[in-house]
Image (cartoon, rainbow, N blue to C red):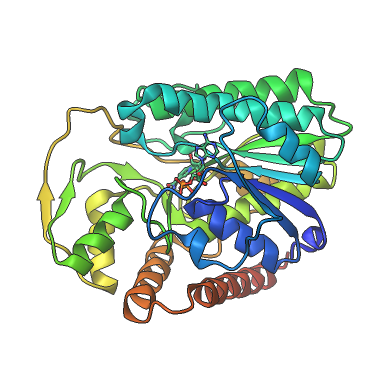
Length: 358
Ligand SMILES: NC(=O)c1ccc[n+]([C@@H]2O[C@H](COP(=O)([O-])OP(=O)(O)OC[C@H]3O[C@@H](n4cnc5c(N)ncnc54)[C@H](O)[C@@H]3O)[C@@H](O)[C@H]2O)c1
């Protein structure tokens, strides 16, 4: 499985964050030589510090929104593959400090791409954006990669702007014979080890464990929810095609749940209650704009990349609850627990591809 990663030098930006921690651990597990570049972890606790992946030689701390930060790291590491995840990822925070949001997300992405362009080593780059890059018309239809970009809130607008920057580099500035690049647009991500503010799962875990009410602003809002390993699986599979030189895989890719369903905030709370405990819900409105409906059409990834996530949204919720229960009840070796879930995910993946004959 993903043999191409064995011994490869891989740089993950955003390695101190939730998704970057899972991705880095999985890459290490697959035999890659992993390096990271990010700011310091921004929550206590955080998954990054619970994992024994990082040391002074492979973890670089810096702000990618400023020039002169990414280039020297790229020169030092000489990665063959780059996964760019570092970003300000929270819609409500983007209203608090829109300038910092644009600097980290748009300038940060441009800085990473420019460093890739200057490097002699990078063969494949996966740039992570989001499902929120689409001009949201509150459609019931899932969005496709060919739909118009847009974004009303500063986070969505910044990620749509990243898409333009990425496409400009792909179309005019990266030498395709040397480096292939693509963007990955994933849905809302769940999984153990996320303690970010203003995110549903961390808020539910906090409410359940402290027995306090869960404040919800947008109970009926629907999103394509999926487990972090399903997303990492998509990123790694996309990187493989790029690394092997398939230029047709440059461009943008949606990565959404298996059945393309988007489920509501309250449905997530109910599902969480099924596996653990349902918190008391306190519904409070918000004057800040957030989209109501959002679903992703991932048929391009399913057909052209042969990516099929091993876990459904429901299974993803069950695995997420399992993780937090373990953390709250024993709290001991969460690295071993993450590895156990990675192995379970890989096993299901292998079984599914055997059944499908691929
Ligand atoms: N979590 C989700 O539901 C979700 C959904 C779709 C897309 N994404 C995207 O996935 C990526 C990872 O998200 P996450 O959930 O792990 O977020 P996170 O907040 O847990 O991690 C963000 C990471 O980016 C780093 N970072 C932020 N600004 C930086 C800067 N200026 N310079 C250097 N590092 C910086 C942080 O230090 C951290 O390592 C982001 O690009 C996000 O937009 C996340």
